[in-house]
Structures are given as structure tokens and as C-alpha cells.
Length: 315
Image 1: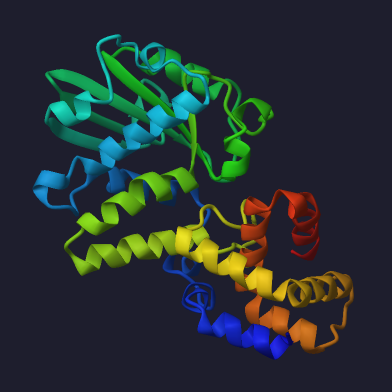
Image 2: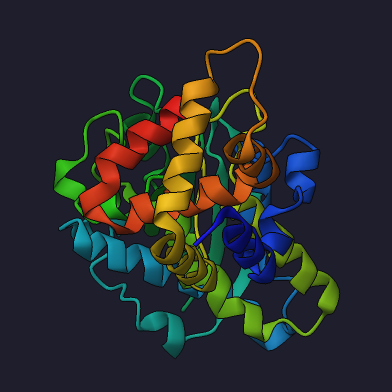
């Protein structure tokens, strides 16, 4: 295989349309801004873009996600919600009414990133989401939130971060800097949000305008932030189709991609760059190549540490 073959494979793939250009959020320098993501999540869960009979689906899928992760993290959902009578099955047995979503609404000096409330079988249900894209928990933030907001009949607490799934799935091994201090918060990631919520509601949208908005947002999750000054995360989530395409390109062109990355690392400290074939391949395809290597890191344990170090050194 040659660099010409690799270039052709990249341009022939569906990846070129996503990674060969900037998303709207990147143009606005909002790709990794917590406030931008919180506002989108609030809009997503509110569900006004769906037919009326389907508007509760995003909220239902989100609670089902929390239930799955609670099980994975050995957390008792009854203890978290403060209700022994609530079950996830009730979301399908009773009609959800009056969904209300706010972002960073101040209440007694506290501001949770996203707050969802609704009525279910005459009971108020609250979802409190603390969203951390590039920052860490401040002081005793989640414990303070839990003590303050734990007053309603049923409460869910979510701690949302871009942590890769291979780390989150091994929840017990997470360091104190990777998760939150309050054990009542269920830790989820943006990959969960994409897989369990967004992918399940996309087929329900009848308006092409809203489908385009969703796709633009998904593009911002999957696009590496190598152009931004504060690179908190190369990629926040990967769609299934994109991941399969990336791993396939890596399988066919691993030696060529490694040579490009090695040359980029070699030239990084040089004041005057040598515009050889490897350097030009990197300059033209840096977004796609960064995404491919990230996909391999997330899905191939044998090369994870080595490639993570390499990717860090070249950016």
C-alpha cells in the first residue's frame, strides 16, 4: 500500500465528509464548551422536535441509560432515587406529563447544569445532570448538590463526562480525578448519550431541519479538537459506522499511518518543516488521522498506551 492508496481510501470513505471540514460548533469555537453542550442536551431531552406522542422518548431513554449504568456501577437505584416504589417499567406503564428542562437555573445559590422535571403517575420526577466536558469537580460539588436537591419524591443524578467507554466500563478502577465524589451520581459518558439516546430518537424525527441539527451535533462530538487552544478531548464519542470505517482503514494502512505520525513527531520541534510526503499527508488529513488513531486507542487494548502517548506528542 502507498500514501496515494491511503489518500484515495480516506477520500472514498464517508469519513471525509465529516472530518474533511469543520462543524458549525467548531467554527464558533464551541466544540468543547460545557454550556453549549448543556444547552443542546436540554433541548434534546425536552423533545419538542418530535411528534407529540413521542416527545417523552428522549427522557425515557436517558433514564434507561442511567439505570443500565447504575447496574454496571453496583449502585442501588432505589437508594439513589429515594423511592422504593419507582421502577423504570413505570415509564412505559404511565404517561409522562409536563416535561420541563432548564440549564444552570440558580436556586438558593446552587446551579446544576441541566435539570429535567416531569410528572409520572402524579409524582414529580427530577433528573439533575452535572456536565463536565473539560473541567473537574470543584471542591465537594456533587455532594453539595445531592444534599441540596434531594427533597423531591424521585430524583436521578447524572455525572456526564467525555471519558472513553473502556475506562467507564471498568468503573472501580477510575481515579478520583476521573469521576465525582458523590456516589449517588451515576457516571455516564457522551458515548452513552450518542448510543442510547441520540441514535434511538433519530428515526423518530420527521423534520429534515431537526435531523440536520442532530447530525451537526453528532459531528461536533466526533470531530477532534486539534485546532482549539484548549484540547480537553480529542473525540467525545464515535458513531458505530464511523468507528467501523476507521478501524478498517487502520487495518489496511497501519504502517503508512504510523510513518506519518512518526514524521509529524520528528518534525514537531523543528522551526522549519520539511514538506515531504508524510508531512503533507498529515497536513491535509490531520482531523481524519487523529480520529482514526483515537478509534484504535478506544478499541484495541494492545496498542492503547503506545498510541495514546504518540498522539499526545504530535499535538
